[in-house]
Length: 303
Image (tube, rainbow, N blue to C red):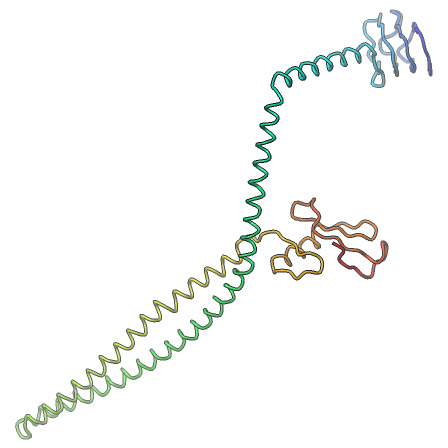
Protein backbone atom coordinates (compact mmCIF):
# COMPACT_ATOMS: atom_id res chain seq x y z
CA UNK A 1 0.00 0.00 0.00
CA UNK A 2 1.30 3.48 -0.93
CA UNK A 3 -0.14 6.93 -0.26
CA UNK A 4 1.37 9.95 -2.13
CA UNK A 5 0.64 13.63 -1.38
CA UNK A 6 -1.78 12.58 1.37
CA UNK A 7 -3.12 15.23 3.77
CA UNK A 8 -5.13 14.46 6.88
CA UNK A 9 -5.53 11.68 9.42
CA UNK A 10 -4.78 8.09 8.37
CA UNK A 11 -5.65 5.01 10.44
CA UNK A 12 -3.83 1.77 9.52
CA UNK A 13 -5.05 -1.57 10.83
CA UNK A 14 -4.66 -5.32 10.34
CA UNK A 15 -1.18 -5.13 8.79
CA UNK A 16 0.51 -8.54 8.62
CA UNK A 17 4.24 -9.18 8.97
CA UNK A 18 4.60 -9.53 5.17
CA UNK A 19 2.83 -6.23 4.37
CA UNK A 20 4.72 -3.13 3.20
CA UNK A 21 3.39 0.41 3.16
CA UNK A 22 4.62 3.96 2.50
CA UNK A 23 2.99 7.31 3.30
CA UNK A 24 3.99 10.76 1.97
CA UNK A 25 2.31 14.06 2.89
CA UNK A 26 1.29 15.67 6.15
CA UNK A 27 -1.13 14.94 8.98
CA UNK A 28 -1.39 12.08 11.47
CA UNK A 29 -0.78 8.32 11.13
CA UNK A 30 -2.41 5.94 13.64
CA UNK A 31 -1.29 2.29 13.89
CA UNK A 32 -4.18 0.29 15.35
CA UNK A 33 -3.49 -2.50 17.81
CA UNK A 34 -4.33 -5.16 15.23
CA UNK A 35 -1.24 -4.33 13.14
CA UNK A 36 1.67 -6.79 13.17
CA UNK A 37 4.75 -5.02 14.64
CA UNK A 38 7.03 -6.61 11.98
CA UNK A 39 5.24 -5.00 9.00
CA UNK A 40 7.55 -2.68 6.94
CA UNK A 41 6.31 0.94 6.88
CA UNK A 42 8.01 4.12 5.56
CA UNK A 43 6.65 7.59 6.49
CA UNK A 44 7.86 10.79 4.76
CA UNK A 45 6.80 14.38 5.36
CA UNK A 46 5.14 16.26 8.23
CA UNK A 47 3.35 13.64 10.32
CA UNK A 48 2.70 12.86 13.93
CA UNK A 49 2.57 9.14 14.75
CA UNK A 50 0.26 7.36 17.18
CA UNK A 51 1.42 3.77 17.75
CA UNK A 52 -1.20 1.60 19.49
CA UNK A 53 0.80 -1.58 18.93
CA UNK A 54 3.57 -2.97 21.12
CA UNK A 55 5.94 -0.89 18.99
CA UNK A 56 6.45 -1.06 15.21
CA UNK A 57 9.83 -2.71 14.65
CA UNK A 58 10.31 -1.88 10.93
CA UNK A 59 9.09 1.73 10.91
CA UNK A 60 11.34 4.10 8.86
CA UNK A 61 10.97 7.85 9.56
CA UNK A 62 14.33 9.21 8.29
CA UNK A 63 12.55 11.53 5.79
CA UNK A 64 9.91 12.73 8.26
CA UNK A 65 9.91 15.91 10.31
CA UNK A 66 7.79 16.97 13.24
CA UNK A 67 6.71 20.63 13.40
CA UNK A 68 6.46 20.59 17.15
CA UNK A 69 10.01 19.24 17.45
CA UNK A 70 11.28 21.89 15.00
CA UNK A 71 9.48 24.66 16.89
CA UNK A 72 10.96 23.42 20.18
CA UNK A 73 14.47 23.45 18.67
CA UNK A 74 13.98 26.97 17.27
CA UNK A 75 12.69 28.22 20.62
CA UNK A 76 15.72 26.69 22.35
CA UNK A 77 18.07 28.38 19.86
CA UNK A 78 16.32 31.74 20.39
CA UNK A 79 16.76 31.41 24.16
CA UNK A 80 20.44 30.55 23.67
CA UNK A 81 20.90 33.51 21.30
CA UNK A 82 19.24 35.84 23.81
CA UNK A 83 21.54 34.54 26.57
CA UNK A 84 24.64 35.07 24.39
CA UNK A 85 23.46 38.60 23.52
CA UNK A 86 23.08 39.40 27.21
CA UNK A 87 26.60 38.10 27.89
CA UNK A 88 28.01 40.25 25.08
CA UNK A 89 26.22 43.34 26.38
CA UNK A 90 27.40 42.63 29.95
CA UNK A 91 30.97 42.06 28.74
CA UNK A 92 31.09 45.36 26.89
CA UNK A 93 32.31 46.70 23.63
CA UNK A 94 35.30 48.02 25.54
CA UNK A 95 36.78 44.51 25.64
CA UNK A 96 36.30 44.22 21.87
CA UNK A 97 38.08 47.54 21.37
CA UNK A 98 40.90 46.42 23.69
CA UNK A 99 41.32 43.15 21.79
CA UNK A 100 41.28 45.01 18.48
CA UNK A 101 44.08 47.29 19.72
CA UNK A 102 46.05 44.21 20.85
CA UNK A 103 45.62 42.61 17.41
CA UNK A 104 46.78 45.82 15.69
CA UNK A 105 49.84 45.91 17.99
CA UNK A 106 50.66 42.26 17.16
CA UNK A 107 50.31 43.02 13.43
CA UNK A 108 52.77 45.91 13.79
CA UNK A 109 55.25 43.56 15.51
CA UNK A 110 54.77 40.93 12.78
CA UNK A 111 55.34 43.59 10.08
CA UNK A 112 58.51 44.78 11.84
CA UNK A 113 59.88 41.24 12.20
CA UNK A 114 59.02 40.49 8.57
CA UNK A 115 61.00 43.58 7.51
CA UNK A 116 63.99 42.36 9.56
CA UNK A 117 63.76 38.86 7.99
CA UNK A 118 63.64 40.37 4.49
CA UNK A 119 66.66 42.56 5.27
CA UNK A 120 68.62 39.61 6.75
CA UNK A 121 67.71 37.47 3.73
CA UNK A 122 69.08 40.15 1.37
CA UNK A 123 72.33 40.34 3.38
CA UNK A 124 72.70 36.54 3.46
CA UNK A 125 72.08 36.19 -0.27
CA UNK A 126 74.43 39.06 -1.14
CA UNK A 127 77.15 38.05 1.30
CA UNK A 128 76.84 34.32 2.15
CA UNK A 129 77.47 32.77 -1.27
CA UNK A 130 80.25 35.20 -2.19
CA UNK A 131 81.93 34.47 1.17
CA UNK A 132 81.76 30.73 0.46
CA UNK A 133 83.32 31.28 -2.97
CA UNK A 134 86.06 33.46 -1.43
CA UNK A 135 86.74 30.92 1.35
CA UNK A 136 86.90 28.09 -1.20
CA UNK A 137 89.48 30.03 -3.21
CA UNK A 138 91.46 30.63 -0.01
CA UNK A 139 91.30 26.90 0.84
CA UNK A 140 92.77 26.07 -2.57
CA UNK A 141 95.51 28.67 -2.03
CA UNK A 142 96.23 27.30 1.46
CA UNK A 143 96.48 23.76 0.10
CA UNK A 144 99.00 24.95 -2.51
CA UNK A 145 101.05 26.60 0.28
CA UNK A 146 100.83 23.44 2.41
CA UNK A 147 102.04 21.40 -0.56
CA UNK A 148 104.92 23.82 -1.07
CA UNK A 149 105.85 23.61 2.63
CA UNK A 150 105.82 19.82 2.48
CA UNK A 151 108.21 19.94 -0.47
CA UNK A 152 110.43 22.32 1.54
CA UNK A 153 110.33 19.93 4.52
CA UNK A 154 111.35 17.06 2.24
CA UNK A 155 114.18 19.18 0.81
CA UNK A 156 115.35 20.17 4.31
CA UNK A 157 115.25 16.52 5.39
CA UNK A 158 117.48 15.61 2.42
CA UNK A 159 119.92 18.34 3.48
CA UNK A 160 119.93 16.97 7.05
CA UNK A 161 120.68 13.46 5.76
CA UNK A 162 123.53 14.82 3.67
CA UNK A 163 124.86 16.76 6.66
CA UNK A 164 124.69 13.62 8.83
CA UNK A 165 126.75 11.76 6.23
CA UNK A 166 129.23 14.61 6.34
CA UNK A 167 129.28 14.46 10.17
CA UNK A 168 129.92 10.72 10.01
CA UNK A 169 132.70 11.30 7.53
CA UNK A 170 134.19 14.01 9.71
CA UNK A 171 133.94 11.76 12.77
CA UNK A 172 135.83 9.05 10.87
CA UNK A 173 138.47 11.61 9.99
CA UNK A 174 138.64 12.69 13.64
CA UNK A 175 139.13 9.08 14.73
CA UNK A 176 141.89 8.67 12.19
CA UNK A 177 143.48 11.93 13.25
CA UNK A 178 143.36 10.87 16.90
CA UNK A 179 145.31 7.74 15.99
CA UNK A 180 148.14 9.84 14.61
CA UNK A 181 148.04 12.63 17.20
CA UNK A 182 151.36 11.69 18.66
CA UNK A 183 153.14 11.75 15.34
CA UNK A 184 151.21 14.52 13.63
CA UNK A 185 150.24 16.99 16.31
CA UNK A 186 147.22 18.43 18.14
CA UNK A 187 146.78 21.17 15.57
CA UNK A 188 145.24 18.68 13.08
CA UNK A 189 142.81 17.43 15.73
CA UNK A 190 141.76 21.01 16.55
CA UNK A 191 141.18 21.71 12.85
CA UNK A 192 139.01 18.63 12.38
CA UNK A 193 137.10 19.41 15.60
CA UNK A 194 136.32 22.89 14.29
CA UNK A 195 135.01 21.33 11.06
CA UNK A 196 132.72 19.01 13.05
CA UNK A 197 131.40 21.94 15.10
CA UNK A 198 130.66 23.86 11.89
CA UNK A 199 128.71 20.95 10.43
CA UNK A 200 126.72 20.54 13.67
CA UNK A 201 125.85 24.24 13.59
CA UNK A 202 124.55 23.75 10.01
CA UNK A 203 122.45 20.73 11.10
CA UNK A 204 120.97 22.78 13.97
CA UNK A 205 120.17 25.63 11.59
CA UNK A 206 118.36 23.33 9.14
CA UNK A 207 116.42 21.70 12.00
CA UNK A 208 115.28 25.15 13.18
CA UNK A 209 113.99 25.90 9.64
CA UNK A 210 111.98 22.65 9.62
CA UNK A 211 110.45 23.42 13.03
CA UNK A 212 109.53 26.94 11.92
CA UNK A 213 107.86 25.65 8.72
CA UNK A 214 105.92 23.06 10.70
CA UNK A 215 104.58 25.72 13.09
CA UNK A 216 103.48 27.89 10.14
CA UNK A 217 101.66 24.95 8.54
CA UNK A 218 99.82 24.01 11.76
CA UNK A 219 98.93 27.59 12.80
CA UNK A 220 97.90 28.84 9.38
CA UNK A 221 97.26 26.16 6.75
CA UNK A 222 95.38 23.35 8.49
CA UNK A 223 93.32 25.64 10.78
CA UNK A 224 92.18 27.65 7.75
CA UNK A 225 91.15 24.44 5.98
CA UNK A 226 89.10 23.32 9.00
CA UNK A 227 87.41 26.74 9.31
CA UNK A 228 86.55 26.96 5.63
CA UNK A 229 85.24 23.38 5.60
CA UNK A 230 82.84 24.31 8.43
CA UNK A 231 81.58 27.30 6.40
CA UNK A 232 80.91 25.11 3.36
CA UNK A 233 79.11 22.46 5.45
CA UNK A 234 76.91 25.15 7.05
CA UNK A 235 75.97 26.49 3.59
CA UNK A 236 74.70 23.03 2.56
CA UNK A 237 72.89 22.14 5.80
CA UNK A 238 71.15 25.47 6.61
CA UNK A 239 67.55 25.85 5.32
CA UNK A 240 67.11 28.57 2.66
CA UNK A 241 64.50 31.33 3.07
CA UNK A 242 61.54 30.71 0.74
CA UNK A 243 61.52 33.34 -2.06
CA UNK A 244 60.43 33.57 -5.71
CA UNK A 245 61.72 36.03 -8.31
CA UNK A 246 59.20 38.23 -10.16
CA UNK A 247 58.38 37.50 -13.81
CA UNK A 248 61.26 38.69 -16.00
CA UNK A 249 63.54 39.49 -13.04
CA UNK A 250 66.93 37.94 -12.36
CA UNK A 251 66.97 35.50 -9.46
CA UNK A 252 69.24 34.23 -6.72
CA UNK A 253 70.29 30.57 -6.45
CA UNK A 254 67.85 30.15 -3.52
CA UNK A 255 64.98 31.62 -5.60
CA UNK A 256 65.89 29.38 -8.55
CA UNK A 257 65.73 26.25 -6.37
CA UNK A 258 62.33 27.19 -4.91
CA UNK A 259 60.92 28.06 -8.38
CA UNK A 260 62.09 24.71 -9.81
CA UNK A 261 60.61 22.81 -6.83
CA UNK A 262 57.29 24.68 -7.08
CA UNK A 263 56.86 23.93 -10.82
CA UNK A 264 57.88 20.27 -10.44
CA UNK A 265 55.96 19.37 -7.24
CA UNK A 266 53.14 21.84 -6.42
CA UNK A 267 51.56 22.44 -9.86
CA UNK A 268 48.07 22.21 -11.40
CA UNK A 269 46.66 22.93 -14.90
CA UNK A 270 43.22 24.35 -15.72
CA UNK A 271 42.58 25.06 -19.41
CA UNK A 272 45.58 27.01 -20.67
CA UNK A 273 46.70 28.16 -17.19
CA UNK A 274 49.32 26.36 -15.10
CA UNK A 275 49.36 27.42 -11.43
CA UNK A 276 52.31 26.66 -9.12
CA UNK A 277 52.08 26.75 -5.30
CA UNK A 278 54.45 27.64 -2.46
CA UNK A 279 55.59 25.26 0.28
CA UNK A 280 52.27 25.58 2.12
CA UNK A 281 50.53 24.01 -0.92
CA UNK A 282 47.87 26.76 -1.17
CA UNK A 283 49.56 30.12 -1.85
CA UNK A 284 50.29 30.76 -5.55
CA UNK A 285 53.98 31.30 -6.33
CA UNK A 286 53.83 31.58 -10.17
CA UNK A 287 51.42 31.10 -13.09
CA UNK A 288 52.17 30.07 -16.70
CA UNK A 289 50.16 30.25 -19.93
CA UNK A 290 50.00 27.26 -22.32
CA UNK A 291 49.41 27.80 -26.05
CA UNK A 292 46.70 25.08 -26.08
CA UNK A 293 44.52 23.56 -23.36
CA UNK A 294 44.62 20.04 -24.87
CA UNK A 295 47.88 19.55 -26.76
CA UNK A 296 50.21 22.39 -25.67
CA UNK A 297 53.54 22.85 -27.44
CA UNK A 298 54.83 25.96 -25.67
CA UNK A 299 54.61 27.64 -22.27
CA UNK A 300 55.41 31.13 -20.96
CA UNK A 301 55.40 32.61 -17.50
CA UNK A 302 52.43 34.92 -16.80
CA UNK A 303 52.93 36.05 -13.17
